[in-house]
Amino acid sequence: MGAARCDLSTLADLRVVEIGGQFTAIGGRVLAELGAEVIVVEPPEGSPQRLRPPFVDDEPGTDRSLRWWAGNVGKRSVTIDLKSPSGIDTLRTLIDSADIVVAAGDRLAEGAISYHDVATAQPRLIWVSVTPFGLGSARADQPVTDLTILAGAGPVWNCGYDDHSLPPMRGAGDQSVNIAGTYAAIGALIALAHRDYAGVGQLVDINVTAACNVTCEQTTYHWLVNQAICLRQTGRHAYPIRSSPVQVRCADGHYATTGVLPRKPEDFRGLTQWLQELGLTDELPEAVFLELAASRDTPVDMSLIGEDDETTAILSAARDAVRLIASRLPAKEFFLASQRRGFAAGAILPPHEAFDDEHTVARGLHVPVPHPELDRTIVYPGPPYLFSASEPGRPTRAPLLGEHNHLLDELAR
View (cartoon, rainbow, N blue to C red):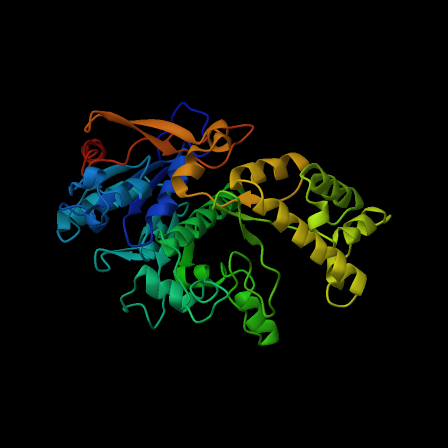
């Protein structure tokens, strides 16, 4: 088992051995953020992920891939030649010291090491297998990419714009890898909870295609239950019928999403007051329906849209009012004013602006990480969760190739 360390992180006493694969990185990173010691095993020449652009300063190098950085924050790197008998023995020794293994399958080194063989001697070991189609699949040998996984699993289908003359689209950023990693971390944590109760580990089988499929919101559900095909809709949930647009171009040219409509009488009073303060009431004749809703004793029932004329008119007026207000304010100002007034809305910001937003900074997501090999410090996003009784692991830079091979020497003694 991993050696205990003197900190307050949730998983501080655990060692995770990640045999790096196409979909393993984010699961290992999440466990590292929770405080586990995560050792990523690479071949002597390094993980293929180290060769993927973009590179820091646009200069390719084994230790300069930003994709490698993003997936391996907080980990340690050891290099092992799994094509040699001595390398296989070294990996066995490393796994002997582990609480959790994260790997691209339940067999390693062309079957020389398997979960079932290891578990006989290590019944408390948790082995998380992350593969494109799940263990035992007839498609196991098929090559995959982020695009083919997302297309086959469904997320590409329900992402895109109302104008269906445009094709569906894939979100950027290796979303299948992120989804797979999230489920891998969840599976590992559930298995840990079970081990605390029952005293035994288990094999966790993460099917990346299935994980992406159940991340399609309502698309799969509606097909399975109703045989209904959901429609792609700009900036809102795919659904079998069209819903009202929620994105609006603001006064500064940026976009905002107008979010959830008001429902309670006090919300409608606040919306009416906001229109009055901005001098926009005369531009919205339908404001009379907002006043009608404000005078009610009960909230508006959104399930009656399209069935009850008064409800439909009220909510249509609310949407028009929010869109009118958003069109007259800069996106960020609209967002902040909506928050102060209790309306759910958001500004659509470029990634760098979202990261530098004062809310993000105040939440503590800006974490300076030293990179001595580059003679600079780089600001990373920190863990997205806070705990009252423990601390998440503080990010450290992704490991250099073979930077922690001394750990293998220590285990061999």
